[in-house]
Image (cartoon, rainbow, N blue to C red; front, side):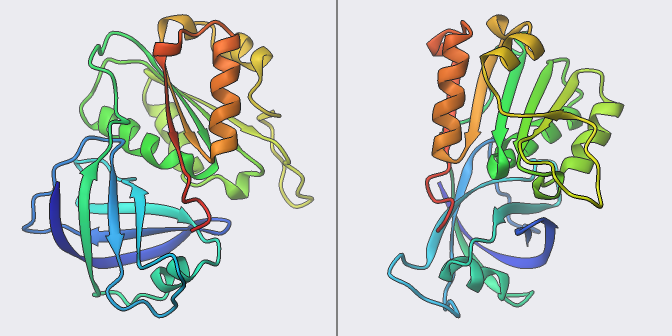
Length: 243
């Protein structure tokens, strides 16, 4: 693992209660596989609690992008408030990458990604990298949120689907009630009926599930019930979701 000091160059809101943070990597090669994580430490956080000043984040950018990006729900924790208030130009120690939540080696086997909320972050990296590499591999992303406003990167993902025949997006909303906006897509949770109806080739695919622990556990059980082999279900639980 590398230990580098990066500079915060951009921060912005990308969805309801969700922010993206970009760190400059000029002159510092930072090699990682899409899907891996980093640990970010705040040197002198503005707000403090007993959980410390370091947190783990999935890398949201692809290796081909000019900056290192993370994205997170802003839960109001001391660390995340400190990160949101961190001035641009601040130096941030970064450890990593680490983790084995990345694509299988056989590029002829399709991949099915199932993301719950902010669990989209490792998949955004994987999909972006595959597009950059003109990969022939087929990808299906099932992206589950409460409302479209909660769905980070939704517009970007919809554009990628239009431009790339190997990428299929299935966005589903569990509580799409907003009098000012309409949602014409799928509604409801990811259950066995959903998997059998929308993922007809799931038995041939490797399935990846990321998000809050309850989402990951429930969807992994659904996939197993739908007939996916245990060895073809890979998970990434965001235990630090509220940290």
